[in-house]
Image (tube, rainbow, N blue to C red):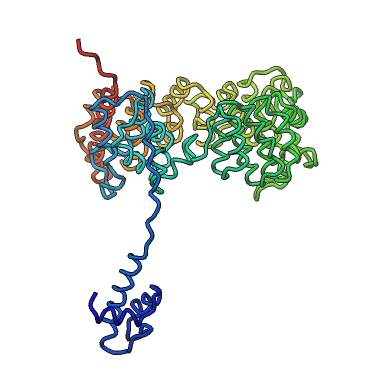
Amino acid sequence: MSRTTATVAASLPDHWEDLVTPALLGTDRRTPPGTAPGAKAPSDLLDAAAAVTVRRRAGLRPARPAERLRPAPEDPRPSLPPAAARRLAVLLADRPGASGGGRRGAAPDLMELLPQWLQAANARGYAAPPQALPALLDAARGRTDLRPAALRFAGPRALWLARLNPDWRFALRAAPGGGPSAPDLRDPLGIRRLWQEGLFAERVTLLTALRSRDAAAARALLEETWATERAEDRLMFLDSLRAGLGPDDEPFLERALADRSRNVRATAAELLSALPASALAGRMAVRAAACVAVDRTRDVPTIVVEAPHECDAAMERDGVAATAPAGRGERSWWLGQLAEAAPLGTWPGRLGGRTPEEIVALPVADGWQGELHAAWCRAAVRQRDAAWSRALLGEPSAPEAGGPGAVSLAERARLLATLDAGERAAWVAGFIETHGLSEAFQLLGVCAVPWAPPLGRAVVDALNIARDAGSYPWSFSGVMGLAERCLDPSEASRLDALLAIPDEPEDAAPGAASYWSEAFQRLVTTLRLRGAMLAELAPEEPAP
């Protein structure tokens, strides 16, 4: 340090903050203490800053050495085959929006293939390559839908990494056992300590993980602190009981019907109504049956409805909301809630021993059919009753394919979800063959992947018909995207004939033919790529 610098530094304050303010504002607006204003003020300030910097660094005390990092845990799962590891690197290198939006072109969307690749790798029990973990965590950070599969594939080393990078802390919350203090589920003392002392997110994760392993232990844990929990926390904790819901949960849920929170009471009532043998379901059955009967004096047996005239305190305690939404009549609102919560097994005995199909086919007097059948739809979904879902869906070739009770596409999709995968696919294939693809998107979303051959053929045939008819091609982009992810890769060879650009009808949308050709090219390329991905994940054959 020069003598001038030392002289100036000696005349200036020791506090760094006293130098920062003049540096930010300028020495013409704020002269540093101990410095004369003028042309030399800026250089004096810099000299002083240099002196104070040296003084501060020289005065630092040696810090205690950081604790040595523990090695990352071992992952006992087998390593990926080399070709699959290279494929994973390519999929992770792709980023959404790289194409710049607009027309997609004929190239496959690699980010849309990543979820299927992860699912296949997890099914085969492979471990993630260590060098891929940062990119894998980055991908999961940006897409919450990827997180369960990505964290399962990433394994324990990803949690080790996540503790070192704040950007990846989501993994500690999302993965069971990922929290820094999360105990082994076989450690009762650790579980109790976390439940009593942990953060809310850690407690939800713990309860959910424990519920999947020991439903009774999770419920007992919740009962211990139930009275002291906040209402919004009680609601979230109660929702975790949906997994593994069974008759043993009834006493606790019955007590929750008296909860201070209306939302907690409503959730408890919903869960109890999903247990057809519960006392609440029995009470709802009595109330609903009193409102619905068969009039045999008419030429054709007809269902007659006498909706409730009031919503009493007992009905409210059992989860019936007394105030109807805007535009709904009170009596129809109350009837719908009663019929929705009553066990579906109530109706055959009440309505003359008829089957669900026969009950649904009966006329309903005085305009009550829509309300009653919509409530039965909700009950079939809640109670996972395939027989009633089948009856309410009706035949897929029926006019509008709505069935008597399906009031919307979303309702039909929920009913379909109660059927087994094969029946679901067959119903949707029949729907498409009769009605085309214009209303099939939501229905396709509940079908198992890869689509069963009849469903795949129905989708491809409908797309081909739409193309030949000169239909507006962008209307089918959603279905085409689903087909890329859900068609069986073996269908690729059958689609080669669709790659040529067809002649455009006179009334076709401009450019439609080239769009269709491009879309089918992308579909075929994607299916072949998916087939290659699955082949790469197959275990390597030992050398002879």
